[in-house]
Length: 326
Image 1 (cartoon, rainbow, N blue to C red):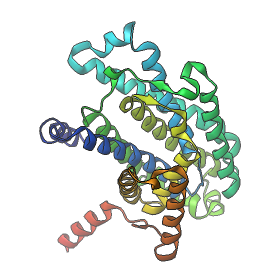
Image 2 (tube, helix red, strand yellow; image 1 turned 90 degrees about the vertical axis):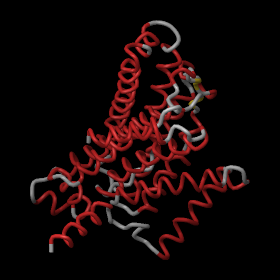
Image 3 (cartoon, rainbow, N blue to C red; image 1 turned 30 degrees about the vertical axis):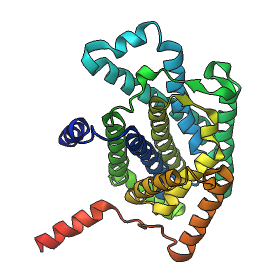
Image 4 (spheres, one colour; image 1 turned 90 degrees about the horizontal axis):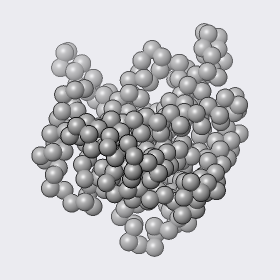
């Protein structure tokens, strides 16, 4: 892992330094969406829940970041910490705020998860959707968070001039989720998804397992939102509407429920597709909903398991090793 981070740091410093700000923004947006899709894949794809309120947890992290930087980032101890020790202070502040954004999303997920995760299917979807909208409405009506105008982030804290902070957090988060799912603990998620009666018969607490997956997925959604707060000059409540939650669900379904490789690939493809439509009338929200619906219809007709099904890139690696061993 240390070698991977060192290689990523060197690539960011020496190979990617000549990229234009526009390309950097595309890479950063794709990385944030990839982490969001991976976190929802744990909930919807691996554990078999149906949550469509993920944007609400993302908003927790985004507005915690924007609020902290807007209210404490101009005077006081935060600017001093940020400039301390040649980058070490900025790293500590950045990591600490990301962790706080994730923990705030955890608190929100426990509030909605404990009473509602005994529900199933449509009922759970409606409950999570409603909670996501409650978070957004609370933000709109909180003047300290900028209300309907949103919050401006001081330019000095934006990290889009370097790709390493966002890419490293995204890669570490996806690796953590993948290794969690493929550990002994992760088997309980699959068991709950496949057959809850069988899971209970072998001693698995289905409710606790569902809440655990929901909380972990929400944590990384909060972290992704916090990263977004560090990369945009304005964090606006409209960025976390129902359409945003639907976008994340579409990424997971397109990639293949249960596949982290598929979720990440679909997140990148959908990000590039939406960027390609930016200069056309199709970028309007009503058109985007139609595009998502068409994508899902085509996918259900011709490849209902998604682009990659449950295939992971590690499956290819293992098959090559086994082929070489035989």
